[in-house]
Image 1 (cartoon, rainbow, N blue to C red):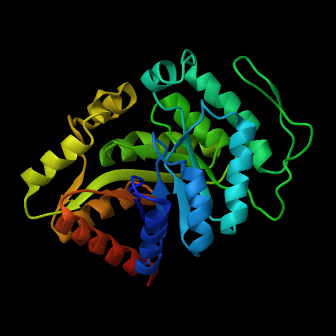
Image 2 (cartoon, rainbow, N blue to C red; image 1 turned 90 degrees about the vertical axis):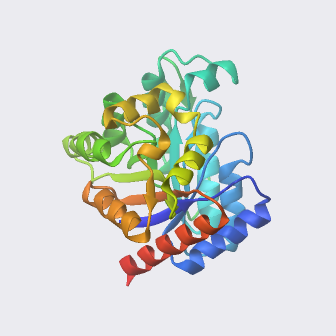
Image 3 (spheres, rainbow, N blue to C red; image 1 turned 30 degrees about the vertical axis):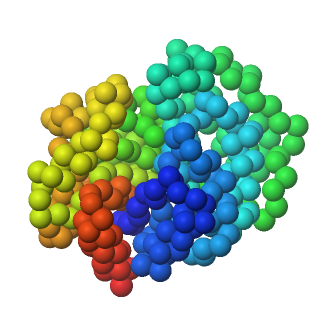
Length: 305
């Protein structure tokens, strides 16, 4: 199982690049940038990845609604060119409140939208024309996208429900999960997407799982920080459904918290669940965050030794 972390994007591109370099030097397998209401994640990865060699660069995740498949494909392939083919493209639907209230777009048929989006995106990434006149999306190219000397990036779909997991397993390269506990990943996420990939004759999917992590001697204080930092997520229907499935209420209920041994036990359980890529969202005060970084770096080094 590969070990990565999310990178705080609330900084300058120069500082983000320095953070990625630190992760590379510490032996992490990957770093992941979110796409919310700040930096454009793919642009940052192109700039930072050109400066920092060797480490995988992921988006966790880019919402598909604001970007036509041709725009996203061209941007992703450009990142591949800039970084010597180290991008993993995580994409997702976002949420109804964002799509409708912020972007003024319809969220009426999200699974159909993603299915048609992938039908157009995947050929473009693989050097093929797209010719889609779908029910909710049109994407037609007259020729393959002209980005030389690149390979198609793996595409991970943020999929939690059964329909989306089956789609991700059938068409994409895997899934990226957030706010979903270990039991739910083991009993729902992994078997559903793996069966779909097998039925479609595709390779075993990548399963990227992200959770808050905090190495701490004060679990109650760490839990309070995590629940405040991630308080929006239990209110969003897709994440609420996963928390309910886990028997959890808040983010801290599924986070990895405590001593180094406790965190490593949690990571071992995640690996046993079938996860291929664990991505830590490091939380806590400055000392706790530094301690967490060191724990994860040692785990990454042990894996690669």
